[in-house]
Amino acid sequence: MNIEFYQALIQSLSKTHTKLIAVSKTRSNDALMEAYQLGIRAFGENKVQELVAKQEALPKDIEWHLIGHLQSNKVKYIAPFIYLIHSIDSLSLLEEVNKQAEKNNRIIRCLLQCHIAKEETKYGFSAAALETVLSNGTLTAFKHIELCGLMGMATNTDDAMLIEQEFASLQQLFLAIKSNYFSAQDSFKELSMGMSGDYEMAIKHGSTMVRIGSSLFGERS
Image 1 (cartoon, one colour):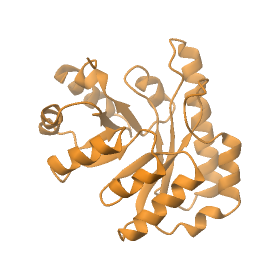
Image 2 (cartoon, helix red, strand yellow; image 1 turned 180 degrees about the vertical axis):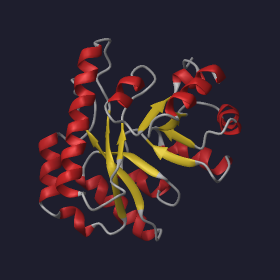
Image 3 (cartoon, one colour; image 1 turned 90 degrees about the vertical axis):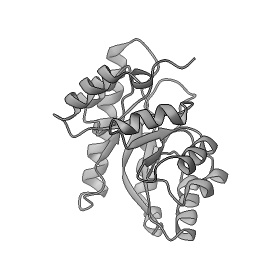
């Protein structure tokens, strides 16, 4: 755990409305407990199996965030406890989350993942697809979902100008969707973007959640 970086980060975030999500995928429970003892309570995982194992073993006041691609057949395993799903990238996935949330008598908080990167391997709604889903009224049937905002991943590149353009475009999309569809819903306020290499730029463009792993825990072996 890079305590020096963590302390500087927390000091920096204290001047913003941005929350730290510690990306803990592949990290040991001991590493997570070290972070927990420093005060971190929000952890982001990519894989359902690893997430479930950690949730069972670690303190129950941890907020678990699913930040990786989620398959519909895995939703049932996290539905009883997940705090926030960042990676809703299709209507069918949202339908399954709603179904499993109802089974667990819960309302599950979700972010809609938007495809903003140049890489085709990234998941997410296009701006046009998102507009279609939101405008046709389909989502009003999902009584066990609370849509809280958007998530995006920038292109994996050293081109800072491109990354900044992608973050700026997601911020504009968020503001438009908030204004057009969620103006009366205070909970639609989250913009999850920015990782270890680009979080400062993301905060500049309105990120409310930064997903940071390697700068906190060190590079993965």
